[in-house]
Image 1 (cartoon, rainbow, N blue to C red):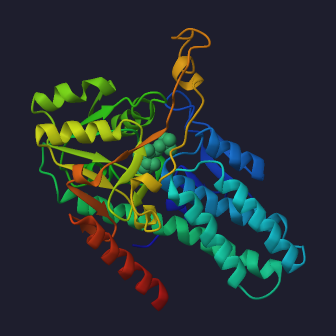
Image 2 (tube, rainbow, N blue to C red):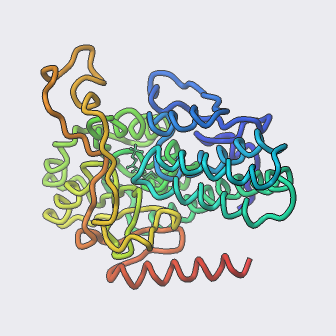
Length: 363
Ligand code: MRU
């Protein structure tokens, strides 16, 4: 699959045409306004990730890759050792912006590894980092396409598909992960009916998923999170497709808060439940979901953020975990760019990750 600069520029995160900044579509302003932000400083990138202006595990990884290149470019006249030290500090700070999605740390560490192993001056290293940041983006475009193909093989024309949060083009590249089969199906004249959970408290399902699908002419119905059980009971859902922020070695995975509840409902109603994600989301260092750090966010996001007036009394205690862990026993399969992994997940994930490392060593 040939990737052109036009393909990259069409993504919600890309390098600016002058290659001096990371450009992102500000996802906090959608669906009402499409605003392109130009990020050039470490603080701007940190804030964009932290505030969810750029969000979705793969998109955060792509953004971090480009940011590391831009930050390197700004210090390319430093002596090599000082340059590498400063870049490492920047990377650590970026990683601290959000803890759950592994793609952020994965992309930063990959850029730092390339920096350390490239011979020559800071300028030579920077040139290599430019190529690496594009490689991270291009790989994601290809991975999404392969995930879409695999996912499409799991459903039939006319099926009802329920999704939670947003794992579409805005959160990744082009097709998305969980919505990949739906967009690819549309291209091939295969129609599905999608139920998009609104996804409290930050409404990624309402603001982003229903926006992306509706804009593409896909049959989508927005529901409140507490309606999933009803539409499942009515027989209107034949499969659940969700994204993932980190998949542990045993198949447990973290995704947007509420995902594990949907998985429990799907099990109850006998509906296949799939998570779809690139191999960059698999973290073999996490043995199980208990090793995944769950980000906790400001309670104001629940109390007042999306309302003209607060919807809860001032000062009321709020608990606002941004993600939850779905137990692997609730999962029918994990759909990756390297194939569909069925239980036992520990064995299947080990096999695809070993094959991926082998391939990387050969290139
Ligand atoms: O807090 P967010 O909006 O970044 O959470 C995103 C999700 O949970 C997505 O489902 C996940 O990152 C996969 S995106 C392909």
